[in-house]
Length: 357
Image (cartoon, rainbow, N blue to C red):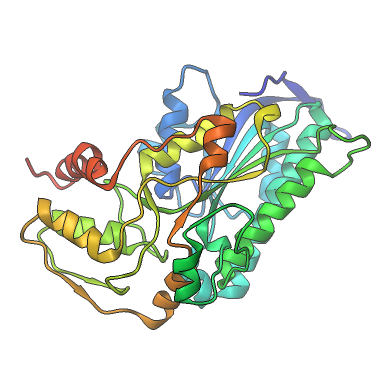
């Protein structure tokens, strides 16, 4: 955590109000938000956590937070109100409209994914101006920032590095890549008078692959076939997969994703050579995923009915990503293979979730 001192917010005609150092988590009610807030609350540091989501917070989230709010990251007056009560040393900006949903509502996706990010960057910049502390902005980006033109090109590309194939084919990918570039600008160039001086914020992004959780079934994402298949297996239900059997994408577990966010946040800025990093754990085809899950849930029946739109998105994303920069700069290391992810985390968690012994 960055060190910060209580500051005072001064409004003409009103007494000065002390503002409390805090961590802001947007998208607090989402799949990643739940795990991140629990991890922050369980850390050894005494953190004041503010959770923001479109929906009212669950009791589980509210119990971990100093304050929770139901609101929209596009609402500048709401963020201004928060800024009068807190100065945020860290902002975990998880709120987003995901890939499939963004294709169906591209204008709304732009407003939420890019406009909301700009609002949070503005909040961080104003915090630095008022306190002298440079806030971290932690940003979950995505492999959707990549784009390969054909299946042949996808096979030829192999594991894609951060600077390669940056021609996204979806609104979600365009939004995330643009947000990364905004964060890079405000970190490396905004108000910089001399080379090497810090910018206005400390922006750090992770380009996540598909994320599989034992606790929640996601909706609205293109990699959802992985977790949906697994949750169907745990409930003895058949599953119709919306991509071809040969479709290959990288994945990781939710605890690994949370650990990656916290590890990147803890890294010294001087060790970081970029503002956006790849991470991954395993990269099976949909058929390999079905076979490996089916070996543990023999009753699983998987059919393949590719959805043209979603298949087109998957075919434009890399089969795998190169995460060596994250390993070198801040010590990232995948914890799981597909097999160990199932045996050590996913299946035990699913059995608890569905009340099965």
